[in-house]
Length: 239
Image 1 (spheres, rainbow, N blue to C red):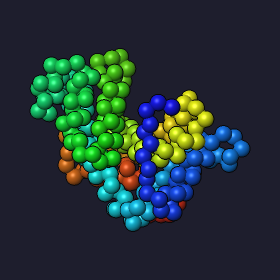
Image 2: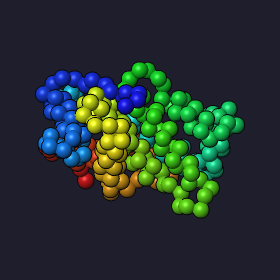
Image 3: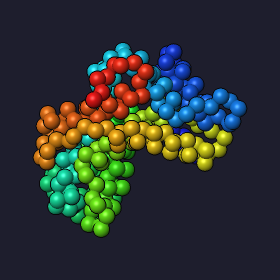
Image 4: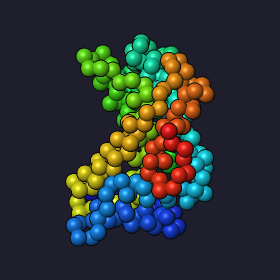
């Protein structure tokens, strides 16, 4: 199926259940298939087991992701007001402002997320580049511009989905009958997570407040709500 994204997660009981759900999710008919939501639910349970099944421990595994989300919202407000090149200059990257947008996006992702070999850094960098590339099409066009809060929700959902795919990649790829089935399955997983993130009713902080405590708490509540809606137990206080 081409370049593999497979990564073997831990082999505890919850992880075995998550991998089993991922296998059945893409198995041919007749192999007790499960829905995309069940795969995500099992994955969140496995993350909770690894972190000690406490809300704060689980969220700690997404600390870098939340910081990048803050940066993204603040940067995007500047970009929609002044334009992408001016936003790059305002964020201390004037050399990137002279490059094509796709180069600037990759440079920004590399600046914000240091490559340390961790799964979270890899996912945050990729999700940031993808979200900015998609949102850039709205700047200067006749279509409504993407709001910072909506972009952050999209980023958090995408980062979470990519993390799931990397953790359960071996099971997903092994079960898929072919590449098209694999890609379609990943799309359904992404849609399930994105739909959950998009409906979180948390009101965003005001303009210019993304980098402060208000921004951090808002990003945390959104991610908390997404994870909580895929949990069986009431670990999270979701509003």
